[in-house]
Amino acid sequence: MSRRILAAGDGAKRSSTVVTGAALAMLALAACTSTAPPPPGQGGPIQVTASDTACEVSATEAPAGNISFAVQNTGTKITEFYVYGTGDRIVGEVENIGPGLSRQLIVEVPQGGQYTTACKPGMVGDGIRAPFTVTGSTAGSTSQDALLASAVAGYQRYTNSQIEAGIARTQEFVDAIKAGNVDQAKALFPVSRTYWERVEPVAESFGDIDPRVDGREDDERDPGVAWTGYHRLEKDLWVTGLQPDSAAMGDQLMADLRDLQTRAAALQLTPVQLANGAKELLDEVATGKITGEEDRYSHTDLWDFRANVDGSQAAVAALRPAIDQRDPALGPTLDQRFADVDALLEQYRSGDGYVLYTQLTEQDKQRMTQAVDALGEPVSQVAGLVTT
Image (cartoon, rainbow, N blue to C red; front, side, top):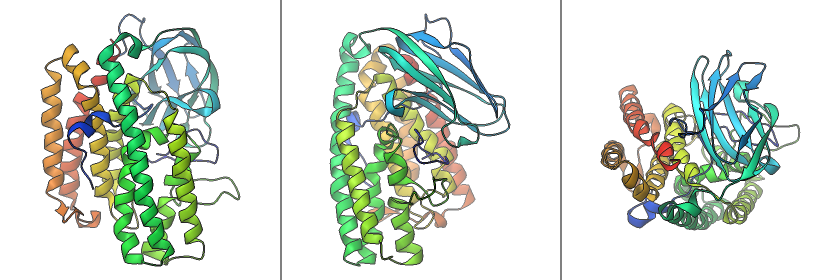
């Protein structure tokens, strides 16, 4: 996940088992970022100038369909840019834009209506917001392209199955905590998180669920809002020992995951969200997992690393027929880059899992960064292909 500070009610997230075969073709990821060029025939992207005190968007409306934004950070703080729908549902986001850097975001918005744009200098709070109108409506890419429709349908099914499986494994984790079986709970912690990490961008579409499930101890919260979720229980297991409210924290985690299950089943996704999510998961590996801060108490970061890469690979695999149709040369490149990352991760295997992150050297981390960056470049091209 990307490092991001949250307040309660914030519409955004801070930011083991390998998915194989047909499963790789169906993992759901949701509204995230893209470094692909803007879709053709749309007069270029909408320009966004993000400073420490302002969020200047060059247009306040756009026709329904694929909408491209070019975001430039002219401030001194790392920033983010979001497009929100009703109820602060994230339609699209681009994170970790450093001072002086530019990023692009492509979103597919088939239905007209009122939306909101927001820049978040310092990655804090609700951001600098402004209304944004989408006019008209469009049938959407899935109604016009059978390959894309098939990818999205399969990907939605896989999302639901991953969440269901994650609920079952997390219940085992919570049961071990309630029984006071610390060793078993420690063993189940990274396994249960695997399913969450594969579908985390879907969870990030719901700004209230994500911080409750995956928030960190030093995240900003409103007064009276408790720290809950996986990482609170991680600290109980590895640092403080089980607390009087650890069982209640486990029950809350289960309730939040079941809430996610209900909402995700009704979420309507688009092909560009799948493509953007594949890149975003790799960005999370490169900017978050590599630092070792994700699982700072257990040091089980490589399980999350593996799940993020699997999620990205699954998203790309779901879109592979459309990729091959539009750019036959890109698929083999993607295959090779994913294989390179897989081979590197296998060097750190330990039994059914991975070595602790504290066992990695700086050279190990550098090799991982280079491999993920090399993979991210061709993955960033996929969003542009599925919007043509």
